[in-house]
Length: 113
Length: 111
Image (cartoon, rainbow over all chains, first blue to last red; front, side, top):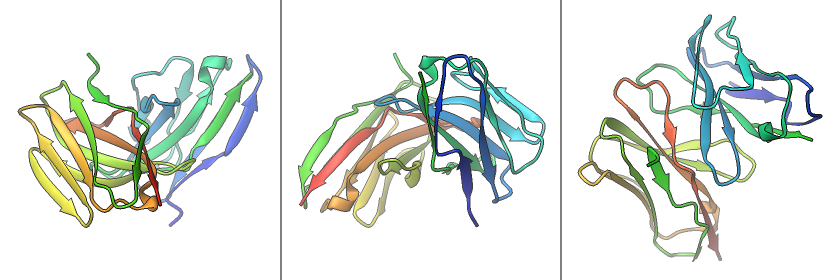
């Protein structure tokens, strides 16, 4: 099992550009999450999904969009990138709502200049 | 008041020291308490979890939860340089889907 994979590992965007961060898991998990991590600020939830076709906002959803057409994939879309979106983005998944363990991907480091 | 408070450190200790990492929280509905470890430039990994109050031990690591004080701790005995990482506390309530994370404490253990 590869677990949770994320692409790309690094990306530099210009202000106003758009991009999609990819996340795939091969554990047949229903629950998937997107977090951003800024230095010294912990993990903040952007969006999450409880299954294919179902998504919901987290703590910091502005400027982002998600979709979940399959169990495996949960892409995060950035529209009109801004410097405030410079961060490390982590995707995570877990099998059930009662699970306390989330499995994280290796992260995508994004810089917006 | 933030839901979960964690001192970001950094914390530097010599090899063999006992380390205490702590979080406080405000939501009395939290029932599940976790500690994640994150090495530099990696994703977090679950280290320990505790349900409700009490202690849990796993090798050199002990997790404690005091719900009356809304306070959780992670103790590391005989700390090793390989323990150098950022430790994030996380918690959620019974019905919650998402975890609430602390800011993380960066630990450095020198040999």
